[in-house]
Length: 54
Length: 463
Image 1 (cartoon, rainbow over the protein chains, first blue to last red):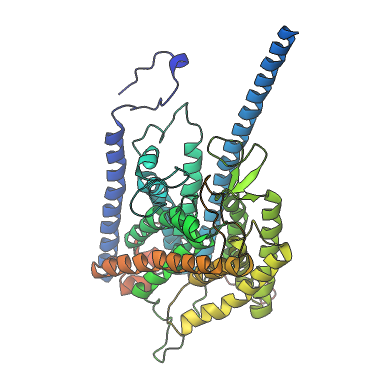
Image 2: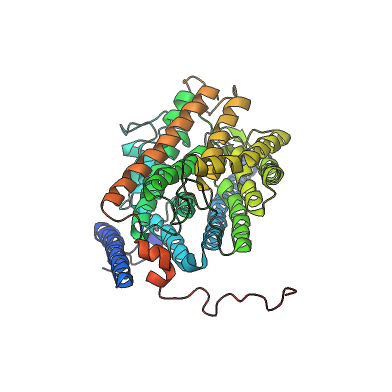
């Protein structure tokens, strides 16, 4: 991904990794990680209840 | 002579620049420090909830609390921060009188905005976002305690995300923003967030509790209630004290430091979020007097340390709406009344409404949030409610405005809490299985033990 910054003296605004085009990707990845964690958490919970029932 | 004057002007400009830089650094540091202080609130809620749980559910309660904090942070980044700036004037997304609201203005708060990350031309957004995020997490923690020992983790998290990421911040946009329609239209005044945080969270909890139902064994067949004591009262009480320590950070976050491009007034002055003048001194007087009044009021009625420490919190919440305005003895009296009414209100909710609120969250945050808002209407009517933009008419605090605000905050918390928990119940995502509730949630799903060696009883009565 890298950056086009070659000299800190010229930087005035945003300077984060992915600035200027990659924001959507990392937004979607972080969002998907949250949703995925919830799905896996729910699955773990249901399995725990089933296991206890046995 | 001209040269000397020019030199002097340069020196003055330099000094002004230094003063401005110093003020900016102070302002940023001030809000930055509210964040670790507010994290203490969560340390407190964690201890409070785990202490209020029975031994068999201690770690499951802890997991639920920690995860609420963790999921509300990205939720507030993804959507909450934008909601606060987009909707103050209502759902139209139009710009308000101060031109710091509406869809166009709120674009800076979208997660893919260049201001939502490291940016050398903007050193304050992240700090403000952080402070607001901790407010959001606080609402989720308020709700969390009420539902311990029988709610599913993921169902709970979906509810916490809705509350912390959407609902409270919508309330804040309407009633805790200088362009908020409740403020500009009705003079709604809620300095310390009695309505926008406490009421919304407290009544959200009530909506969920109705669908969730009581813990097994809470009510007898004849409708009478049993007490289900937590396993560690000292832990619970210490947790409550930690919440109060953190509240100083929470209330610090309700103050605007003057002298900045984004703030009200000159450097060295302080204002409320509505732009009305205030002093930190006023807030200090009233927080401490509210704290004391709440404890003593609860002590007189209950003699119970749990309710006394809840009274400290309830006392501050009772005074929260007008912490910038109260005469300290009046703050004490308002808090005393709040502390005194807490236990009877909790008994009413439990015995008459048959609601099992494990930590009294509906009472402490919901009921006393109402009292906090109405107290401002009763005692502080007539004060100018905000700094109005030039050319617009002044709006004043009134009982009617506070009452309408209380109704709005009640509905904003209760209705979505009831609706989403009903949907989760239909989907089988709300309540744990009966077997798991009886066996204990730690045994069922936590790969660790809270007390691997048990809690030993003393060998002799003297120990």
